[in-house]
Length: 188
Image (tube, rainbow, N blue to C red):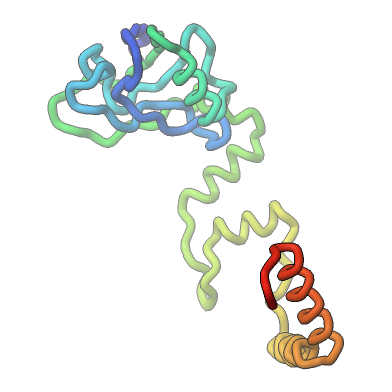
């Protein structure tokens, strides 16, 4: 894996798009280049991992923090990059970073396991729930919650309609309309 440094002369636009970040549990990398843009002219390639921005290690940066750091650069943008393979003329699938680089971004082994478990999500037989949805429900503590009962929904709708037709609601609505008209100096 080759590491190198690129300094782009400003001002923005720099001619590339980022993907990943600590909040996505994926190292920052270049996902798109503007043909003929500053980054492309400097030898940056799609799939390059961004190791540093203006000398700051990106392993602890979220996606938005990295974007903000790039925006704040002004006239010079210094990027520390790493390339897993030589740049070729035809596009290739971007390789994933090695396990050691992922461990820097994903500090918790349970999060790493969760990422690996959600890679092969499929709908559960007989339901529309995917495996990743079930894992999310487990993480948020909502896996045992059920949809509201049809009868309960029907009763609450009927109660709502009855309240809309009640004299109390009518008085409150009329008072609100008069008050609003008075405040807005409109004839009611």
